[in-house]
Amino acid sequence: MRKNRGRTGRKRRRKQFSSLPSNGVNQSHILEYIQLRKWLKERGFDDRNLRPAQFSDTGRGLMTTKAFQAGELIISLPEKCLLTTGTVLSSYLGENIAKWKPPISPLVALCTFLIAEKYAGEQSVWKPYLDVLPKTFTCPVCLDQEVVRLLPEPIRRKAQEQRTVVQELYTSSKSFFSSLQSLFTENVATVFNYDALQWAWCTVNTRTVYMKHSQRECFSKEPDVYALAPYLDLLNHSPNVQVKAAFNEQTRCYEIRTDSHCRRHEELFICYGPHDNQRLLLEYGFVAINNPQSGVYVSADILLKHLFSADKQRNMKLSILRNHNLLENLTFGRDGPSWRLLTALKLLCLGADEFTYWKKVLLGDIISARNEERSLNIAAKICFSLIEETQQVLYQISQMKKDKVNLENQLALVEVLRLEDLMILQTSTEILYKHVHCNNLTCSESRP
Image (cartoon, rainbow, N blue to C red; front, side, top):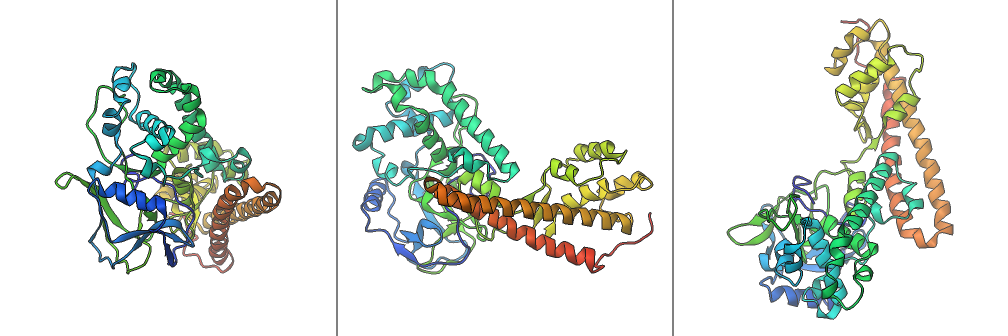
């Protein structure tokens, strides 16, 4: 997790959810939660306003036992409950970490501790927390390659980058893992295998809250900003709420306050940040239904596929867009093509006699009715093309779900993402249709 990743600075996985409220089934009586709450109480946390519950749309979460008003403190977790690099250094791993050169990163330290404690089983002081952590994750790094190929191109590329990051982390950490052999009766290569590191990396990457720690010489220069927060990390994400979260230096607790009202016996949500579905899937392994932040990305390759190859000014236009960072983050959203996408198309659609006005396009000026019509027509063609591609992938998914039962959950996740994309594209098509076919343009025929 990195600073400014969201309002709470948190990163954690969660299943796809609906923004509609659902009734939760109290899970407080389940042994793993009884033991977790007992363990937390011994460390100074005894919250009576939230209960673990199972919800039909979000899965596991926290349910209120009282109504919360905007601005009210919803959870305050003492420092003793947090798992940080300080926890790791004060453990049996501390001596090995302190003398290892070159220094390992704070991330590797936390991953190492999680793997070692999970291996310790009943002997682990952190067992009550480890028992409620996910056994598997649905971040792209964990998805089967057949499933990854069904993702939209931008996140497909990032998924491969994520996989490479974890693989390189594992390879570069092997020597350090080997140095821990004296602490284990079993071969460390078995304990610290790739699957174990992948699980620990996903745990840290998806569930930590932001908490800045002072730089220590025994760690590399990478920011030490991680803290695993038991119980607090059961809170689910909603794009429709606002929260304030930070470590309080006076109370020595990690605190979250809500800016929203929440009724009694409802699920309490927080917001991880204004992320679209591709970002949520990449970072947390879930998709948010009806996410107002979501959009469908249009790559430069898709743009070029629909433009005039005979345009002699094409390379110059592309160079201008590249220099102004207008070949990335081009999207269709719930309100139609984004300003960035339309601006890029308008510039690319400038006629030879209009090219001198390219700066006015970047300023948002209308050059001509012809330019407006061309750019909207191409936007519509791109949108139709993406709809067709999305429908083909959804058909592939439906076929694979019959044959690949073991991949059912992963396929269902990608299916939700693609269905959300399809809905956005269909909405954009309707908006473009009104502009293109109903003469709903507000432009002038004359050039400036």
